[in-house]
Amino acid sequence: MSIIFGCILILACKKQTNVATEQNTIQIKNEKLMENVLSEVEKKEGWQLLFDGKSLDGWHKYGTDSIGKAWIIDDQSIHLNVSDKKEWQAKNGGDIISKDEFSNFHLKLDWKITKNGNSGIIFYVHEDSNLFKYPWMTGPEMQVLDNNGHPDAKIIKHKAGDLYDLITSKEMVKPAYEWNHAEIIASNGKLEFYLNDAKVLETTMWNEEWKKMIAKSKFNEFPGFGTYKTGKLCLQDHGDKVWFRNIKIMQLK
Image (cartoon, rainbow, N blue to C red; front, top):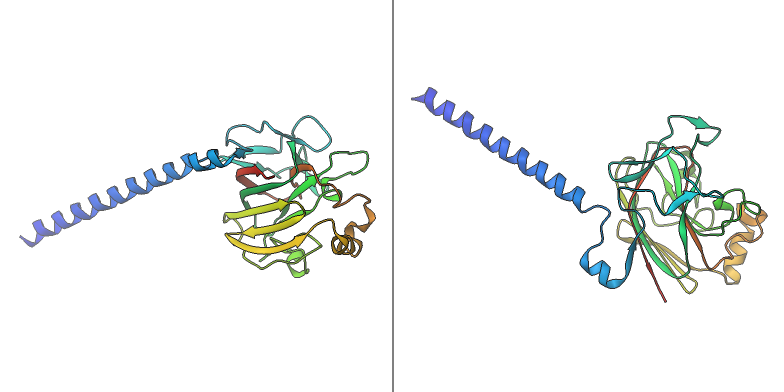
């Protein structure tokens, strides 16, 4: 009797394990279906999807009309493949920027970075490669970084979530290879950064204090940096593996 009971117990445990596995598989599939889509509420609010998980349409390499082969779609994310590098960036990579320009906006997206990795989200990019060799010479940047491994994390104003080289933020970043949810709100000069649902910094752009901050930063050698009130968005190639998904923007008045 005990042997029979034991066999029944083992079969019951196996059945429960199989059911749990099937449920987890269904959950993962459902979660993937929810990536890179707008909810009905978001549609009514006026959100725009900048990446649908299937195509890189709407993005191009800064200063060109195409996109390098190093930028690929991986697991419904925009991913930078750095298996082949040229100097400090990916070969056939480069910074990619949005087709459209934005003035007052609310941007939200998810990002994750490789161990010891570095990247950035740059906005108000003025696309003129004759004036600016790289987008970071023209527009402000929300830093993307592995704070636990990259040397920049030891520099004030260079950590993940910082307004790069201008203002330090409240540290809310997750470890390498974990998804972070970032938001940038720029409205009539007021700038707010959010990371993982926490406001990490706020400031006012284009006033005298803003000009003084820039004058004391590495950007003081680039005339025009931080002055543009309309511009494109940029995902930075800093030579490290990085992923972006759920890139959504709502234009504000």
